[in-house]
Image (cartoon, rainbow, N blue to C red; front, side):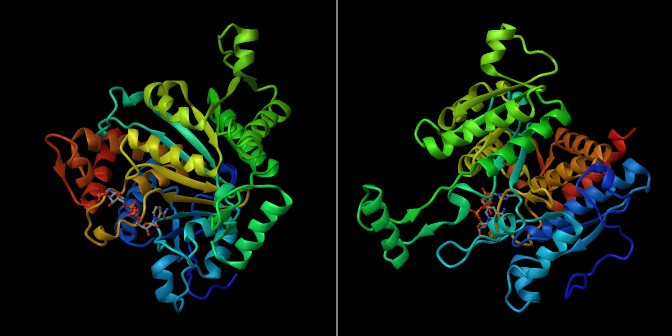
Length: 418
Ligand code: NAP
């Protein structure tokens, strides 16, 4: 496909499907730099990933980076367009991408670019691995027990964008229908939003989590929901998740009930335990008994809250990675925002984007490179070389710039590689 502003690197090869066996040694990977601190963290992270790939595979593998555009940088290039159509086309053609944060102005009339990307490309699973790394400041006494992967539904729920502002004809029409036809009762002038949760959307998310659990040897999946109150949305989500596990993955799974009834509480090594917890209590459990949790599957809004809350237990959104994955495209992303006050100061923590890249390397099947980044990162933290956000929480730390932090990690790859 011909592009207006995107330059396809001549030396790279197209990724032909999302499985490790479809990844060439020089895959073309798309990147969106992002607004605000995006330039600083993307520049630093690309240096780290490239160094790790080079070291892990002795030059046999190399990512061919292809810049694509969204947000303020896109607006400058495409005559004020924040989300050019060819950005979607490029992701559909090249399948794998990684992005920095994008600005979303608060208030009406501007749909979040992040939500748009997820919905247009049908990136239905938001995958957020959250674990503690040696040396990361944490408010917990035993942060090492936090090691979960959250699968958040990405396209439905109150995020579907079916909302009607008070005072609009649409709002009045819907309000009248709800009151007159369905007997609903609510205050005059309420803003109205609809929360769709479908069997289709829920089951494909749970199916994805189950496949991930089987491929990577995970032990349990906890379905998080508010089904005690919202029975036909959140409660249905819970029911459909159990259904997929039983009907499509019966030989790999048992329920928590079966664990006690049939196995006396002793988990057989070849079975994944499927359990569920109500959304409010999960926050307490994840704080007080984190080792009981492995994979978590949640609808959109609850998944959003839980992802940031768990991340806060082990370093915060400054280092938490994220990925948005569909059947055709994978887009990895920093989970924090653009932190505009730090734009171009070479100051912030590149960890969230860097670990999103680690997650990407794992999905590509480049485990050795992923491991190298993680181990070099841990060594760098052990040396107390950190960016400002960690420096203010640590005693005796050396505060460095974003670029210097990347340099320290790359240097440490030699130490952990031997
Ligand atoms: P934010 O950009 O995440 O920043 C909030 C605070 O988090 C910062 O002031 C900073 O804390 C800390 N922080 C964020 N990134 C950091 C990093 N890499 N290293 C160290 N500390 C970091 O959230 P916001 O101010 O609410 O949002 C700003 C803009 O980003 C908005 O337009 C919002 O819509 C957008 N946003 C985009 C995404 C996305 O693209 N995925 C996600 C969230 C928000 P201190 O002030 O304590 O230093």
